[in-house]
Image 1 (cartoon, one colour):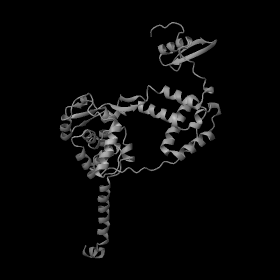
Image 2: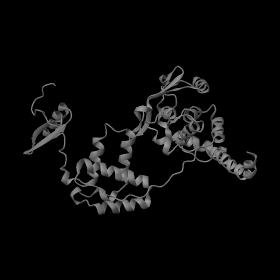
Image 3: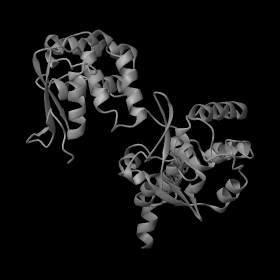
Image 4: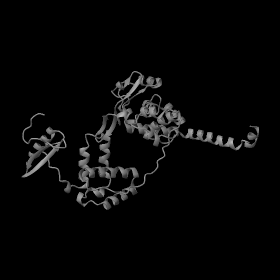
Length: 350
């Protein structure tokens, strides 16, 4: 380590480094994982270029959440940080001005009850989760025991093959052709489609290695959602041909934003008389088709870029509506045949 001038960083048993300086007659400690950063912050505090952080006891819930979000800014995705800041601005507002020593479980429960009247159980859980994480870091003695609203069962309706066929035909030759093919055929996420660059095409394979998400200040290029999201998928000949016809006017294969893809899909569906879908529903189709064909979960999991098969078991473990009728017909036929079998005749003839 390069030798630093006073104040000298001191390594703590935890492995972090501490620098101490005098500010307005008070000794102030600065702790950081990097000794050089701790040293720089300490000098900035001494020079009045950096404000001393508030003692935890005088912080409000809002300030606690702000500090928590700031502490995670370098390790969480821009989309997650953006979501946290949205929660901080809009949810559980009656708690934000409350100082930590004055916070009570009953007050939290009332705020959650009120939010549950206006927003979905998922939104309530997300807001409470952020509050819980912030308190765990800065006020760990206060343990939340909040009763949460019951989860609502959301039945995902997956587009059937007639609907997919109509969308693919309508999108041929348009800017939506590639996004639709990549979603319904290869199972790519919207963010992964937006993140594809021309160097992701490696011969007969598509290397999914990055994504574009919407951060607080606009689109941000990042790694895949999970480690297993970095994957190579064999390109079908049809998709290769479509890609070869695309104009290579920039670095990215698809230049549409997520909002633009959603709007174009909505307009296309309305024009065709099809149900309204989220763009992510197209990815559901890719998983369901694979499962209806008897493709092993392990292969589908890898192809879809899931870290585990949990999503396949809990969300995708159903078939398209047309397949449900087909299976129901098979079951009905089995019992109808049974009812119309003369068991006594069969037994006598045995």
